[in-house]
Image (cartoon, rainbow, N blue to C red; front, side, top):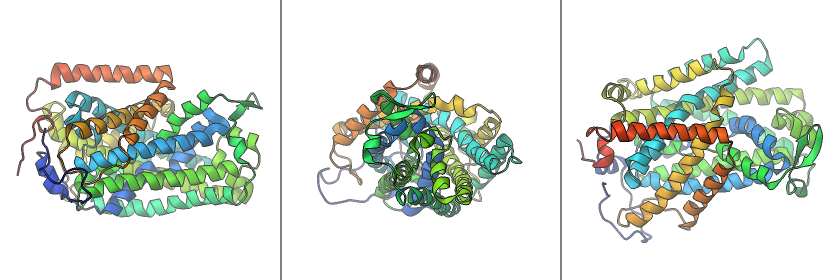
Length: 479
């Protein structure tokens, strides 16, 4: 395992910055991606990955369906846990600023077997998540006018996204910045519509209730705990800042800052809009039974035209999220090829960069083509419910990795140190395990099968190859 050169004791208050390229060479990598992102650019791309508006309009529906009025408590708990995980990711990302993201970090702390399971979680997400988000484009376009077929519209959006993802990373950052600004309009509209017309009291949300067979009935605390897992999925995506680490300028500390700032802003925006809608719901029963509770609040207070504008904003949010997610997962796949994780022809292909833009074009095409094909699977949203289990499993790895890293490596310079250690990683682990305990059995079984197949591939094929994951085992500087 490669360690950073010794420096001040980790508890020193003096910050020592390490340049990103310098740290990469210490870890055994030759910098290859163009550093075209400022910290703000990384935050913009990461916020687009979180897509606060898109998450609320899709994932938020599931939170309300599962927990009813307890969805407010579920979102608050999920937001708290998300910040704990983000603090861990910020420290680890600054210490290991590698495009492979979490799997590259886990490899250096817990070992390559754990890293491969983490990578598998990302690969499955890379296959399913962009398509499920693209379907949001199709669904909301169809709600505006049924002349737009859901699946075809989603597929066309995915093809456009794949093409845009081939541009230079700073161009993508500027593009997503524009889309993100429009997406913020959606958040503001929902929040203002609700908070300017408050009709519900705090006590309403302390006693969970939901609509069952057309009547309001009490929900147990188990429903709230189950909804926390969904809320966590809603605010997920801040780890994207680590995937963009090799393209972020300046100190490795900037990677940690981008992770934490993205999480805090994304969580804050989602909470503002969701709480506004909940407290501003004019009819609690209608709000809980609506297929689109957040747009319902806007339409009730400001009319059909405002709701239409909101839907257009939602389409923009979904498109922006597709672009950011494709960019992130393409970098993870590119890094897995560089680390020699797949059979040689596949790994070599995934490493290829487009000369004109430095974009990992083969990895981007893999993500884009898979997503485009899956856009025609009408039940894709139902199929990918197990993806949230994979996301939460990554949180467990992150929490454990943070603790082991602190205990095992006391000399490396941590340019970003999480506060109140060990509270954040412990809460992240306990919260993630509690959330996992409430997941559907079929989803847990699906993830168990994926992990079992992954371990078989690792132990019977990957571990025996000396060239595979060489940089992760015993890195050597390559100039």
